[in-house]
Image (cartoon, rainbow, N blue to C red; front, side):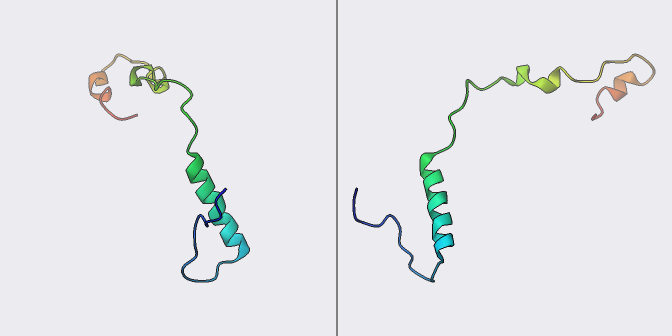
Length: 69
């Protein structure tokens, strides 16, 4: 490993806890996020499209079908 520091404090006097928190954040950022578990799901396969309210016939049903639920 190199002896050069990875980061340097240029102003202030951070505590050991603050430096440790900074190291954790920088390490997590360098590691990156989790890889996606699979291909992205299409909006056509979304769960909320299967959970909509059933259509009910009646007076004004056509108007109510366009209202938010």
